[in-house]
Length: 90
Image 1 (tube, rainbow, N blue to C red):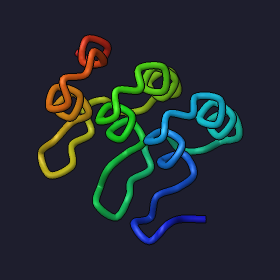
Image 2 (image 1 turned 90 degrees about the vertical axis):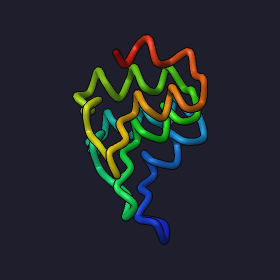
Image 3 (image 1 turned 120 degrees about the vertical axis):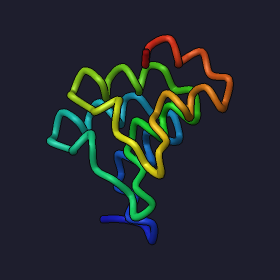
């Protein structure tokens, strides 16, 4: 089930900072590189919000840290937000 921006449950849990839900979704086969209609992955959303534990879980499951959306990587979003997460994405 997706939202109007094609956000999956994994996108929403990643954005809202719900690590237990993210882990459960990944364990049940959720794709860590799925994209919204705007092109954002769960890693983009976790990075933008500074959710380091979620970013680590997504990366452990093979999420692409070099995926670009409109020329923006998750690292760019972490840097824009001043997130301490950027050190984990370099």
